[in-house]
Length: 211
View (tube, rainbow, N blue to C red):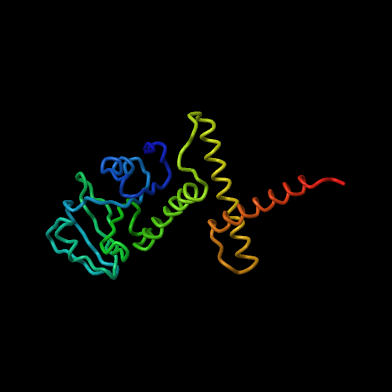
């Protein structure tokens, strides 16, 4: 985890495995910003809950999330104010069609500047990091290292990032030129095929007798 000072002036995006109540409160006090997916907040008290259409979901009492979650709509997101360690924190609930349950995003971005949809769009940006990791591991074989040298490990990481960047560039050029969608996986397979064909042709040319 980065420190609070390392995140100074930045926006921290992370999955639910990185959530910590103490950490987000430290970020808030330091003037940093965050959007995190969270779980395990069923016992927190809900002080306010407003649907996307502006309708209030609670009255004067402050129920726990475990009580309110059965009343959360599936067609609309809900913007809530929840109590965590004595502080009121913004919590946004979305219905996930894939998981068939609500997804919760916690943030300190202000409501008057960032709408519910803005919070969702910002969090979706984090998936570009996951896609990059997947490309490096699945298509560049960056599963681990056979060396304990830190400099060699760093070189392999940079080589993988360069390879991914080049494949994305080639895929983009193919899309613009031929008006077709081309994945980086297919581009990688094409590069391997062209490389093998070129090596085979070169080997055959140098193996032929020179009369």
